[in-house]
Image 1 (tube, helix red, strand yellow):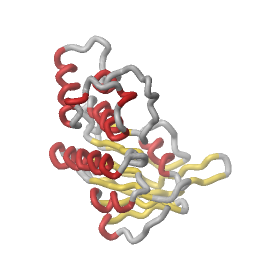
Image 2 (cartoon, rainbow, N blue to C red):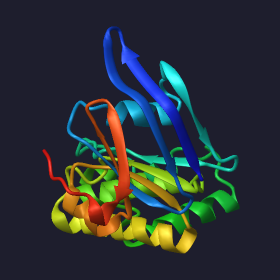
Image 3 (spheres, rainbow, N blue to C red):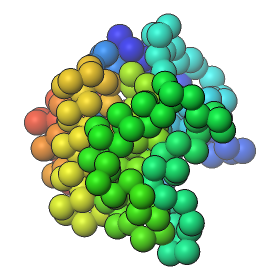
Amino acid sequence: MILTVKNLTMEFDTKTVFEDLNFDLKEGSMTALLGPNGTGKTTLINILMKLLSPTSGSFQFKNNVKLGYVPQFRNIDAEYPLSIKAFVGLNAPLIKKGKVKQQIQHELEETHLTSIQNTRMGEASGGQKQRAYLAQALLDQPNMIILDEATASLDPVAKEELMKLIKHLNQKHGMTVLFVTHDVPLARKYMDEYLYLNNGTIKQGKMSEFDGDYE
């Protein structure tokens, strides 16, 4: 298992967000984290990324895990001056040696951004921006990636393009994927497993057997 969660409980003041969550993620799995708004999906992700501490319970990643994170589409100002290539390299050392430059170029290729790498981020389409966020996350060479509503504001073509890239990363590099989404049809198409968080509890199963739609 790449992740084991035991009896995880989170309370804010007097409100219990969720209680006694138990689940495992297998290495190399592709899992959709589903559930209505306000059920604690973002809270759970923040705990897994160690941005929040749970009230009780525990979680354990496998020793060699490096997490990557792709956020929901953010509206970057049209005047934003950095090129896609410069944006992807933001988290890399300021003075970029040969190996880092090669890695940036490799991730631009892997995310199909090479031909537009000199385009300003402010002028890029929503799908291109999201692929730039993905390339930035891949620069640290993670073996598990969390997509936090990463397709939410994209048009259907851009959604498919991003998800095909995620599938490629999973199949070619064995990357474990946790995809937070409301888009059940998209999850059915690309994910193998689901976690359904609602009413303070979690269910786990095969995505093909998920029997609900919700808003």
